[in-house]
Image (tube, rainbow, N blue to C red; front, side, top):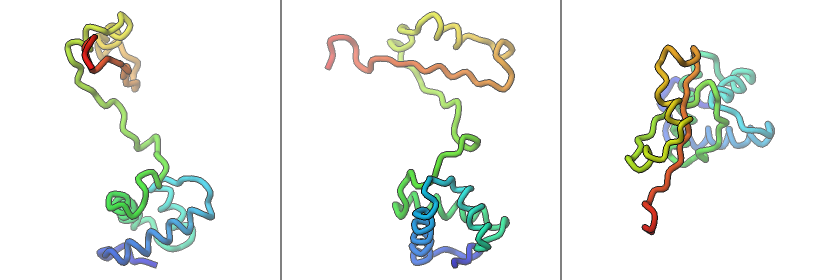
Length: 130
């Protein structure tokens, strides 16, 4: 098995990818990057001190195309939330009363721990334009 405390070269990453793909066929469902760490720890391949390096290696393999981008399951606890999108003037004019009231809530009026992110849809093109 690969020593995650040393620098991983392409040969090491290819070996790691083969290992992950082989293990995935026996699992039968997608596993998060952190989940792979726990599975590898269970099999005594690594210890907890190497978890961050394993996650980094998995993500590097995904970035380089050695693993599919969707190889790992998405973790709700580690997913992005509250991403803002800039709205054009024409989009702002199409807000419904409910959308506008949600956007105008002050921080004190919102439920504690709840981030309100309205989903707005707008036409990209003005009427008649193609």
